[in-house]
Length: 201
Image (cartoon, rainbow, N blue to C red; front, side, top):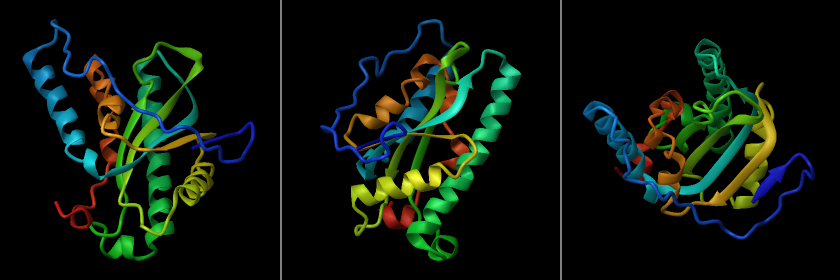
C-alpha cells in the first residue's frame, strides 16, 4: 500500500518481494573486525524477521550530504524526530500501557536510515526502512497506513511519501544492504525497540 502526496489516497499494490543478491558478500579490503560487526548487525535484525508484519518506507525532506559534520548533524535531528514519531505511534495503539509495560505493549520497530552513504544529490533524500511488528490484531493494513501517515506528517522532516507492504522473509536482508557496503551507521539503534514479552523471546 502506497501513500503519496500526489493523490492522498491509499493505493493497494501487488505485494512486493524483497531480496538482495549480495547478502553474504563482504569487501575483501575490510578488516576482520568490520566483517564481524557487519555479520552481527545483520544477524541481530534477522533473528526478528519472523515477527515483522510490515515493511515500511518513510521518505524525509532531507537531501543527502557529502560533508561528514553536516551529515552527522542531520542524523541527530532526524533520529530525534523519529523518536517522537515512534512515541506517538505507540501511544496511539497502546495508550498508557506502552509506558507501564513497554516490553509487552509496544511496536516491534527495526529502523534503518538509508541514504547516509550517498554522495550529495539534491534529488535523493534520506529515508527510513522499517521492520514493523506487534501491531494490534484489530488494526488492519488500511488503518495502519492512515495512522502512520497521520503521525509521520506531524514530524519536522517527514515527507508525504510513504510505502507500507506486508513483510516477507527478504525484508531484513533488504533493509540492511547498506551495512554490507560498510555503512554500519545506517542502523538507528536509538529508535530500535523489541517488545520481548509480546514476542515471547
